[in-house]
Amino acid sequence: MARKKRGRNLCGLMLLDKPRGLSSNQAMQQLRRLMDANKAGHGGALDPMAEGVLPILFGDATRLSQRALDGDKTYQFGMQFGARTDTGDADGQIVETCSAPIPTAEQIKAVIPQFLGPQQQIPPMYSALKRDGQPLYKLARKGEEVVREPRAITVHALQLDRCEDSRAWLSATVTKGTYVRTLAEDIATALGQCAHLFYLRRTMAAGLAEPLVTLDALGELTPAQRDAYLQPVDVLVPGLIKLVGDEQAIHQVRHGQPMDDPTGALPDEGAERLLLDTQGRVIAIVRGKQAQWWPVQVFAADAMQTPCGSAKNGA
Image (cartoon, rainbow, N blue to C red):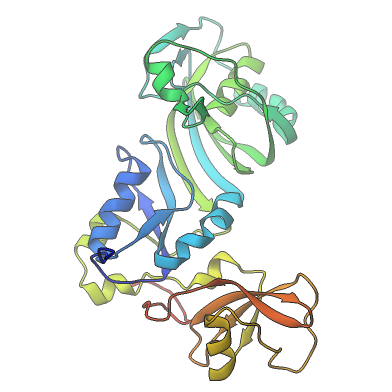
């Protein structure tokens, strides 16, 4: 007999303001315990030195984690010129120093255009990418270095926010798989310098930026106030049109059977919709096939979730 998971069966997500110093998994586990949730996952890891928006998905919402991972992300980051570290950030050991003049704001702005748009980026050794089942960062800690294949990324926006002494602060919006540490090192190289990150904050992930809440703030709230930060599943699939099904249609979908369109229209082949009940709770993602809507992902009937369309302003 399978052992029942402890905690509440939630369905939805929260935007955690991850603090510096915690891994994404550590932050996620702390939030899971605070929410007394039986299942949680995150939608895109942040390095321990990074802070900011970390989508935490609860219960069946974890089935949509890939949609969060695939979305664009926006970062604010700080570059320290004059030294390169083995990790690309302030947590690493200095492996190179540069005596070249610190670039001016005008010089930094002049090289920014060459980093905009589609490009190839070589992932850093200190990353969670795997080689023969082994994370690269574990190989890097042993002093090993392996050839990494370039990955296609796109930098949608990149701007210099300010400069101060040997430091520069920039903002960037990038596609999934982009390493900001590597972007910063490449910018420095183009300027004839070397650099590492001393600051990294994610301000948006997959179009989601608020309401943002910290672990410390949640720890001061009542359980009901914490629940007010739980957002409905539909924020992960903002492009899906919603269908409201009656009791019979929902029964069919929950049992793996297709349903007719509630409006009487014929579903477009391959199109997806978000099926809700009359109270606004997410029932399933359905797909058009053979003139009916067929279940693709069905969400637990007994999960606590916030109805779609509810205003979410936090506690």
